[in-house]
Structure formats: structure tokens, C-alpha cells
Length: 399
Image (cartoon, rainbow, N blue to C red):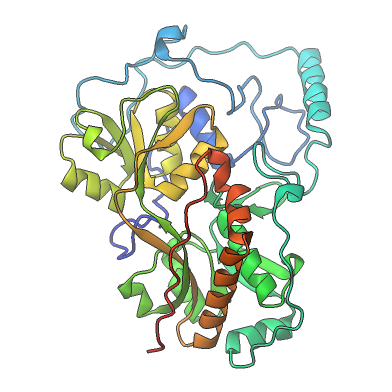
């Protein structure tokens, strides 16, 4: 998602949170930021990543406050004086007595056995697709594109360098332990690479911050970029765009067991969370002023507060929301229809029209033969939302 003053839109990344949350809020937020780590006792890890003893799995069901033994605020209440500040619990959570060392050792052993090669290189994230479930892309080994300077350089170095996101579940997410990138955008990047003559093991993914996408393409740091990158006229002045390959729109994320929100018209009096300064935040603020709008610096904190009944909905691009819903489909769902249009494209160097048009052709082929749908079903489709029809490709003339 873009945040102001970036002239882009909701796909750009918001800032890091300036004030950390405490207790259960911080724990759930950390779980979404870290990705898909399994809880393990402190001091007995099977992976390189730190874990916290006695923490529940992020996939466990969070009880409604009326069913919990811990104090919790109701999700309806008086509007805070400053809605941009985090909404905190009135009391800190009760401390838990640490497990004894023998019990911790036993629990660590059981978890490793259940995981089956805990911490193994390339292990798929929890609830994510395994390598066997992902589509296989036929590599066009005879492909040649001498008119593209970008393709010639990639061919000479023996690999493609592709820019991506690393913090968007089931879109573009990087496993901190293995370094493996997964998600729908990653699958689209691999499909394109195969069409350009490069197998998946000849792709180097590089995390590029949203604010640096245009500069990275202009300076030749990456060959192309795939990461919730909305096509708009201002960006076309700086880079080229193949596609679009997906039509996103602003959506709403709600708890699975509730039905009070069907669309933005139902937000009156509801606590709605979005990223501070983002386009979705501004749209709710301007078009639906009766909503009780709350802002944080990251969407993971918004989702954390949705799961702990402190807000009623989260809003941003529906593709990003689908990723969170796919992560815990028994707890979250995307509701209603999108109420904006955000066409995602593949960014390329502006002057390399040969590469742009070649990628357009590869996308069209993948949509016709069903490869595009397989990539969706193995990633965003895990949210339970069926694959939409891909948008028409815009083969605009060179300028």
C-alpha cells in the first residue's frame, strides 16, 4: 500500500510502528510479522529464528472476550480522543509461570517430531503451499530477445534479478529461516521467467522497498518487479508496465464468525483499521466519515487487533486481505465487493519496450492455458475465494 506523500496507492508499504503494543497484542502482531513460525520452548530451538516459550500457535482459535478468563475491552466503545493512537488493553496480561526444564525439553522434542525435520531448509510455511503443490512452468529454452537490453544482460549473467515484496502473506513473503520467497506474485514472476528462458533456480529475488521500485528499475538493479505494483499514469512516466495480471480493489477483512459487515455502507459506528496515511485510510475518512477509523503503521497490527476483538474490520487492497485470510481461514474472511480498482502490473525499465511486450505475451499465454489460475489456487486461493477472471492486458504503444 502506498502511504502519502507517495503518489502511488494502497499497495505500498506503510511505515514501521512508532509505538510497540504490549501483551497479547504484541504477541499476535509479532506472529504475523515473523510469518509462520511454530512455537517452541525458549532455549531449545530447531530453527535459527527465536521463539517464545508457552506462546500459543498463531493458528489457534482466539476466544471471544466473553469466553476468556482475561480482561479485554469490548469491541464497541467510546471513540478515543486521537484515533491514530493504538488501542490498548486496560490491564496488562497475567504473567505465566515458565515450564520446567524437563517439560520444555520434552515439548521441543515432540514439536520437532511432529514438524518432520524441523527447521529444514526450504520447509514450506504453515498452511502455505508445499513445493509439490505449486505449478510447474515449462521453460522456453529456445527463447531469444536480442532487442531487449535487459534480457541480454540477464542472459550474460546467467540469471534474472527480480524485485519483490517480502512481508505480504500469500502474495510476496520471505521465510526468514530459509530465505525462500512464496506467494502469488512470486509464482507470476516464475511463470514469466520460464517464458523468458530462465528456470526457477536461475532467479534471484531481491526485496525492494515500495519507495525504491522506480529507482531500482531505472538503475538496472533489478530486471523486473512483481509485487502488488499498481499501474497508473504517474508511474508510467518513470517505468514501463506489462499486464495487468491482477485487478485488486479496496476491500474489508472481518472475523469469520461475524456477519455485521457486507460492504463499506455498513461501517457506520464500526471500528475500522488501516495504515496511517494510506489511500484506503483516506478513502474511508472521506467517503465514510461515520466509521470509527483507527490507524497503525502496519497492517499486521491491524489484523492482530481484529483477531483480539479490538477493531471490527481491516481495510486495504483485497489481495493483501486475501493473504491474511489464507493464513488463518478459520478465523478471518474477506467480505463484500471491492470498492476501488487497482490493476497490478509488472514493472520493467521504461525504455525496454521489447521486454514489456514479451512479458505481455507470456501473461496472455498463462491465462489461456490455465497456468495463471493454478498459481492463484495454490496461493491466494487458499483464502477460500475462487480465482477471478484476469483483467485485459494493456499493450500500450511505446512513448
